[in-house]
Every structure is written in C-alpha cells, then in structure tokens.
Image (cartoon, rainbow, N blue to C red):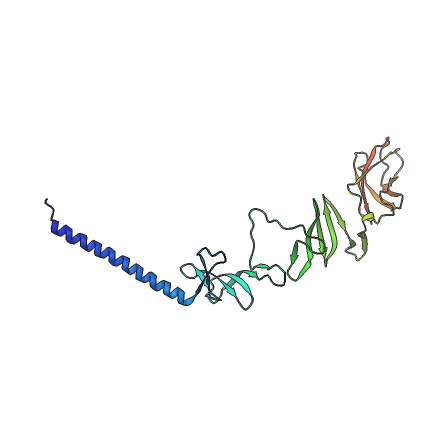
Length: 270
C-alpha cells in the first residue's frame, strides 16, 4: 500500500500541536500554582544561603494522604509542634506533641498512645534524685541504674530499693500483713546486707540441735537469711536468735554427725 504523504504531514502537525498544547497547559497550571503558593505562604532563604528556602506556614496545617489522613503544624497557643491523625476531622487526636525548649529545659515529647519498641530503647543511668524512668506528675519517683547490674527504685527522690544480682536491698521499713514493721536496711553503707552471701560451716554430733553462725555485720541484724548448702544441713530449722557476734539456728531434729558437715549461706542486714 502506498503512503499518503499529505495525510502523514497533517497527522504530524496535529501531534505536534497537541503536544505543544499539553506543555502550555501544564506550564499555565504550574504558574498558577506557584502564584497561589506565593500568595498563601512566605518563602525565606535558609541560613546557609545555598538557594534552598524554608516555607513559613504559620499555624496552618500541612496534610498528607488523599483524605488529609495525617497532618502536622505548629501550635502557637501551646508552643508545640503537633503530628495528628485526621487533623481536620471532628475526632482528631494529637498523637505526637513536641514541646518547645524553654528556659534551658529541653523540650519534652508527648506520645498519646502505646509505644512499641521492637529492638531496644536506651536512656541515661539517672540517679536516686533524678531517675531515668519516671512519671509525668512526679519525676523524682521511678527507676535508675545505680551501678553495673544494679537497678534502683526511688520514691520522692530517696532510694527505696536496690536489686543487685538476685539480691534485694530495701531502705526503710517493710510492713507485714499483720501490721508489724521490720527494718531491713537503714541506708547506711556499713549496715548494708553482706553481699555476696557469707559461707560458713558447723559440725554436727548427732544430738545437738542449736548452732551459732558468725555474724558478718558489726551489730545485731534485724534480718538473717540462712540457706543450707550441704545435704546434712538441709533439715528443718529456723533462726532462733541474732546477736552482734552470731546468728543462731535451731533444728527440729539433730542433724547427722560429721566434721564441718553443715554448710550454710548467710545474708544479714539491718
């Protein structure tokens, strides 16, 4: 079939005119859009002067999604930056708020929902007076890291409890269910529980039921925890007396005879 040169020429011109019209329309719309943006917001050069610009939106929302699903803005009333789901809806939620840094106090970040961390979150060690994990209405009560492997609990800025490699140290009183209070640790370093536990031995003779274990502290303890560390020492017993020199244990039945056959682990504290 022979080509119709005249038809080809007309088709080419129409294609060119159509493409030119499209480019012109896009250019016109872009110009209108630029004028609209210029009218509604102010562009300022950044501090480096490299030609890029910041856009000043004031308190206006910047939204994302086909239905304005998410939005962010600066809230001049509260001096906070907000990231909000459904910002233009009736039931919008301020999911994330970043507080301004004022008076030398670093701005806080508020997240109004559950935080899920799939790896780990690291914080500073903190201290008894300024714990790392705390509460919005009382930031001197919470948790801090006292030393490697030692977790502390503080209340009203005062240390209340230390968890140390499986041992628990409590400052102050522990109130039993019947209302009685027992002092566990008064907070003084010299009165801290002996950690790790002291190992001690005694010898049974087959008839003796009471044994004295050396007290590691310099005063009579209020609390003594005695754990049997040998098979012969594993009978039923209790702590019957505590003095400056010793902790006395009494068995329900005499343990077997032997030399140093009764082994114990002893932890005492005030």
